[in-house]
Image (cartoon, rainbow, N blue to C red; front, side):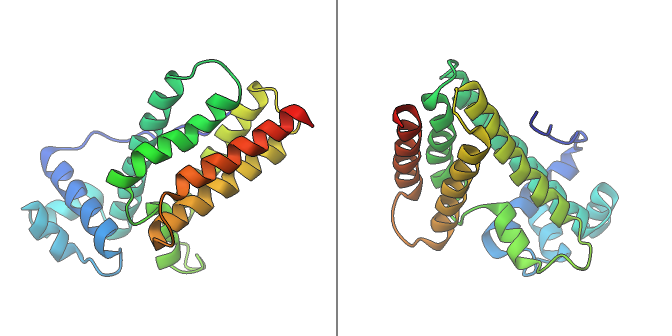
Length: 199
């Protein structure tokens, strides 16, 4: 069963302004490059309001990642609703969701991967590391659920293959190595699923 989204506490109007400003700045500029003064100024609040609502910059980073993840999951759920029958088309819906999501929401690639890369090896126990892991495990589990319900002979191995294609595509989006990586990943995912049906 895929991991649930953590309970996201309701935000006050000031807290929402802080999170919105931080989310935009963290994604566009990077976590280390953006200080609490810059976030507070962009949100039109005091630093005290920022700390009252989130406690620390680290907690604000985790909240930023969790709220983006919640939006992404809602987008995936809406895409899956369009293809309710188990099978390859439903598995490929994850790539369809990514195609419709990435241009507007992730032109610099995955926020979780970017945060993980920026913050190093995790030895300092930064709370972003379990959050990033949770998000990636959720997607892998979702692929496996879809592969299992879709009758794939080895759903675990196929889920891993789908995850590799997905992750490679989203890193390529961030690097701008070539155009439309999710469409290419979807094509190869479709080929793997077809091979499973015929071999």
